[in-house]
Image (cartoon, rainbow over all chains, first blue to last red; front, top):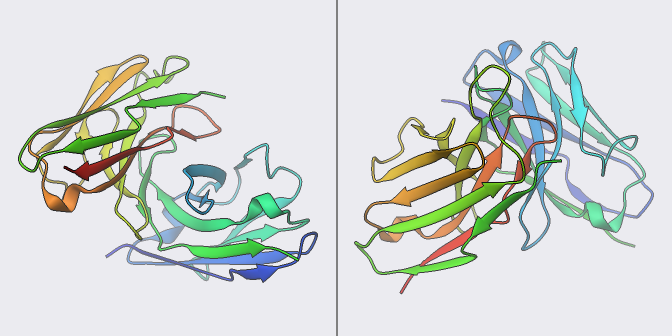
Length: 120
Length: 112
């Protein structure tokens, strides 16, 4: 079955960096795009970034553009989110999620999420 | 960016009764390919979101048939024909027609 497992979250000081990983299994990873979506504590969902199946196309939310970088390693079935210059408002659960085939950017499967807390 | 507005914010429902959630987008969600990429997600307490409906009305694999989606253009609806206890949670609409992807603010379904 499709599985997405996030890791790398934790507590980090403002201005520092963190790298999240999303390990995929149960499907042909190299054929699917992957999103990162976040959810601040007690709040709604906010899309962060997406990467195409081959890594050739990437899009970012304005709130993270220039600070976050999405990448993937298809040999390791893993997507990464490098987060630099972190701010308090980046505190959230970060989910990776798979792009549904033939449905533009629609998301079908979600991971369990990893919590990032930005605090001094 | 496309703004997604959901109503109501909260929906107390009696078990076995229907529930309906509305979602309106600030612009048409019809993609250049002719499809409308409006999805509905369910988030149970303490769980990640789960896809219920894609492309306005396509029920995802394993989703009970008491869930149905409808709408067109800028106005969309999720209906639960008979609410069960396991349906408690927050429901989100989401558009994937253009980047950035955007979500509605969520509707909390709870049992009266």
